[in-house]
Image 1 (cartoon, one colour):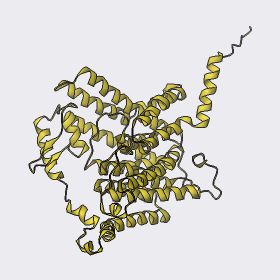
Image 2 (image 1 turned 135 degrees about the vertical axis):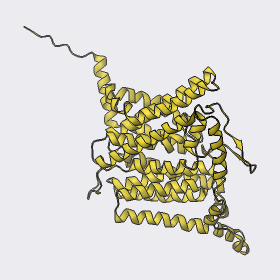
Image 3 (image 1 turned 120 degrees about the vertical axis):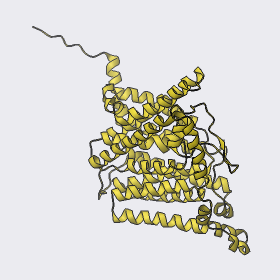
Image 4 (image 1 turned 45 degrees about the vertical axis):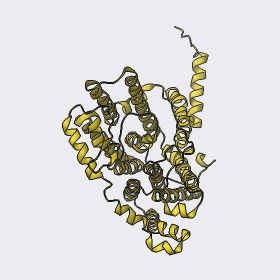
Length: 439
């Protein structure tokens, strides 16, 4: 009995070689990092979306064969709850006031984009224990560069403007202009940088780069005057430091907090002194100004939006509803400034409960990943996300934008950490190996 050996087809062999080459060079990981960095670097979001959807996703489809390797991700509670939350909002909209067919297809495309993003990040985190280090070794310095760029373009390098005015974005140079938005964009890579310094083997130059980046980002957050962003940064940094405590990192965290407090107390006074020393006594420290803002109408607007939820508790008002309201005080607000309240407005109480289930599933996954591998990045980022979104933001299906960094990135990292099997190294080596991120 003879057997005939049939060589594989040349096209299949070439495909396998291409796949091996892409994995060896970590092309998918690098392009993912590039896409997120472009959100900070360019004034248009379209370059980041082009890289993500037309380069990274096709490479993922090529690299993950056989696709059953993605089965643990798509069957996880995090992924199922994320899909259920977004589809519930669309479903309740259709059952309520409805939406045009064109808008329906657009919303379904956004849902697919979010789910693909979750799969991508979770797959990279679970497969490559070095991906998060690579991500924040680039994202944190790029975000710190954007802080310097925004400060210079907004203040025209005037010390008085830097120290006396809340930092905003510059049209034509940055994607986002609102201080609250750019503040949270600074906070997430700041938390990620501290988490990586806490858990990863780093060269001295890498450690110094992340430390400087975290300091610059904390200064940028303070200059925005955004209390939600400051709260998010503090909570995320504290969670990362507490979970993997060391005296060195505790000292670094304390220094970051002290620098922030000093800036909050002295910035307006220094700015006024530079303009007119005689007006120094009339200045109000930034910390005092933050306290004087009180609750920023939160109690009033939450009361109004809760009354709206009570009127339509099951179906909500849908994605097509304009959530802007005029408060009894005469102030206009854009939305409910709380992700659960906004979810109830859009899709009813069930949608809000589904969103809560998603975050609980992400928290459990992040904790499971921490217990198994020592990974704290996901939990730190998720804590920062919860702190920020409890007083601002609205989570709905969107294309790639800041919500992917604020909300979906922590969720996906927690999911990936739960599926990872390798333990995160803590001690820094005596002789650091060559690193691809600084080559």
